Image (cartoon, one colour):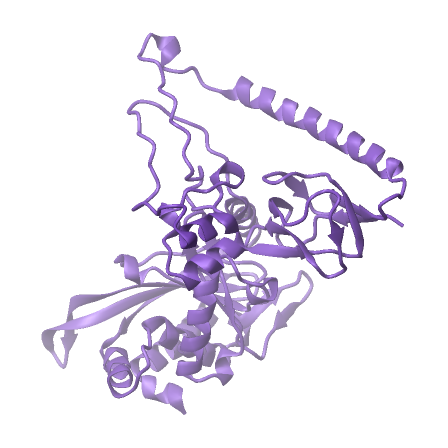
Length: 419
């Protein structure tokens, strides 16, 4: 009996997926559990396994094509099996999709503002088509990224032969065999002053836009900021990094201090449920990691139980796989609290939007030299400001203030985090 292959839901926020590459072609034999395609979700690139054994009779969504969750993307069946009923259904779906695409295109045309050309200005110069995707991120399949990482190949210099210039496995193999030369970087299109263009949103950016809008509209945010003396934490980090082979970051210390403070203030570690609230007796902390096309928040679980060096090792592995698009869904879901650190960008302070269903997020600024008063004397200190964004439905100002008091105490007495 023929089997429908449908677009799977690879994350709790995913609404559609993109077929990066079909690893099988129509007519190929497929075994159950065998990888048949690579799919891009709103968080990572994933491999799709066959639900059943048989022959790949029809590919409904081609490479580079998009499909909503549950949509038919392929059919597997016996070599001589009649699949006309399924192909008729497919034809209807494709026709409907084409009609919808045409309506969207007509709508965009109607909304286009008057161009400079119509105002007797110089005509808009079309950008040359290049391999670099419009959203800025270098497009490459998971296998290509893995091979490039293993052989220290700069993906930016590899010409892609996949859909829309995507770098795929054979491109990396061509570099390794010497048949393809690696350039210093991808060509960039010339920017024409006085022009504008419409760029499609990436899957990640669409998800961010939807979730952050919902968070701001539904959760009444308020913000509390404290300044922290970072000299004890700086000395603590220096001692560890000097005496061991570890390279502890300030983010590692911040996560451990956050976890310790969360265990004392369960409301900050909770979720609003309408008629009730849920509090967590564990600290699964998400860390905002920037990609070219958006943010992904891998989760370090049970931070309250882990040493700082364990947090360091786990976070380093997660961040590396975020950037190579290899993160698994369970590794970026289920956080109870989030830390967003922009200190490395010399940002003094900022406020962050809560990541639902969490009730709070901590925005971390840079460590700056500032004049401070100590024992009646003005001296130079190293100060870091953090801002806690809170959901006022379950967190009050005094609760937020007490949480930050304890967080600050741990940051200014980091040795306590090792007990």
